[in-house]
Length: 461
Image: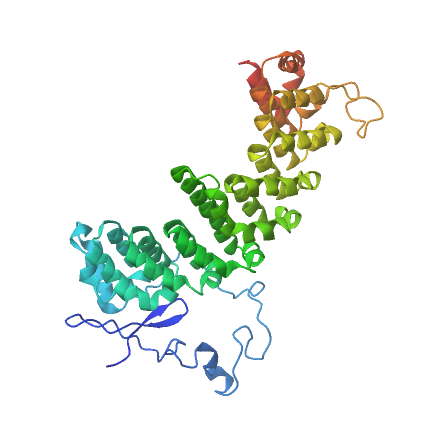
């Protein structure tokens, strides 16, 4: 029987023969269009007819061997982001999909009607959507029909722009037996999939769907590769999900069983991730992806891991406060941390000039968060700093004789700190003096672009 293939994202996918009575899959011809059959030479070995049929020409060089520059070349074709993705359906599968889309009700169609074409459907946008919708309502027999066809091709489907969604639906709606089979396809492939654009989404769905014991086996594959994943644009999402899922499972198990210490022993399974992060905490706090992982640790980790994380971060509070990524970690410290963490940051803010920090794009967010999550003493301390009069000899000679507050309201960033203070500072002496200072200068404030919102707040206070 002739070999039967469908096109996947990495080339042709061999598909097992169709069952008796079912028409075979569309047999794709690989003679043209620069494609080759599995095991063939592939695109790179195609001789260039314009190059004398002899030497191979690099795809990024012209006929004379000069390097192409698509950015500067006036003839470079622009990619239309709105253009439809070319269909990978064969004629028979295409006709089936057209019939399904033309039907008044798609409920009359099941996976059995497309048997033998499931993989092709998975690789097509509308075909993938049809299978996803069916998996949400299908019985076990129908789901098994999908599994039988996609398992041989799952390596390609996991990282396909449309196929990955079908695999995710199987994790979500599959039977326990199906999940075991799917888990088997991840073994030995966790790292590779986690670094892929669509494969990482399949891994995240698997982490949400599989049992704790199965996850413990799979997570071992990340040992020694934690930093590789964290610093990768796809892998960091997997590390975030590992921390979230395993921590939540550990806490839930202890809550259900009532067994003291169970969450600690279960959370040990991700201790290697925590250890690698804490050994590089300052670097990762200032990393666009690393800062996200630390935020998830502060949100979800069990107490002893969270405490160790807060202790490490506290050593570099000052450096992170105005960092473009580190400030997000500090904001999470203020929200999920201890009073001692908030006291440490309050001390840094007071000692390093509230006005200066409030005028900075990132540090101003930290000051706002301290006002939002701080206790009454911490909030009132910041207000007292706002009411302080600027004196000669300070770092900035601007506004000598004026209160810090009146300098803040006219700044693009600092005015938000004042707005937050008005909203959250508790009633008392400090709140009263804050409002009195603003109302006494209300006419002046109306002349400042950034003070208009503050003036509006005064009208309702």
